[in-house]
Amino acid sequence: AKSDSGPGGIISSQLIPPIRDILSLTPVKITEPIKGTYVFDFGQNLSGWVKLLVKGPAGTSVQLRHAEILQHDGSGLIDVSNLRSAKATDVYTLKGDPEGEEYTPRFTYHGFRFVEVTGYPGTPVATSLESHHVYTNVPRTGVINFNVPVLNRIQSNTLFGQSSNLMSVPTDCDQRDERLGWMADAQLSAVEAMHNFGTAGFYTHYLNVIRDDQGADGSVTDTA
Image (cartoon, helix red, strand yellow):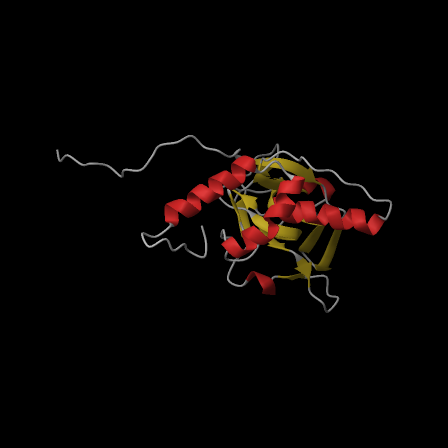
């Protein structure tokens, strides 16, 4: 055996709440723009995943593709051009349970409002797919209501947009092939986040991460 000094550093407890499944939504609309291709609209862009309920023969593969928008040509198909190289795709292969099966992906998350379903045995219904909003479980602390509906909608979108980018660090996006803690994005949204959520531990953790990445000359990286 060879003696080793170990990695060094300071062992400390986690300052932030875990990432949790916070909210579930059912689809507001289901379309079939191409035969056998179904598009579920959950009415709200968010970060997370979907739960699939399905029953069919063993070996059947159901593909789920996630997107924030639809194509502008009126076809009703999803538009993934803003995702760059991110596949945003989950595939579930059935084992053939006669009682039906449930699938929820792990070790990934997506930014989406729409989900394209192909390979589904039969015709999916509203209960076949459920979207789940997933983010660092910081408490909601700020509440504001207006007598103008559009302002309430803007505030709702702000809450979904911010919470969708609270993933242990403040990320810049939740959908494309990046999802990093860009510090410019973080400082631009920090005051808003502190007004709406209890983020004291969250940002203390983030500052510690920045310090851990800091160079000997005092320089810091673009992301942390």
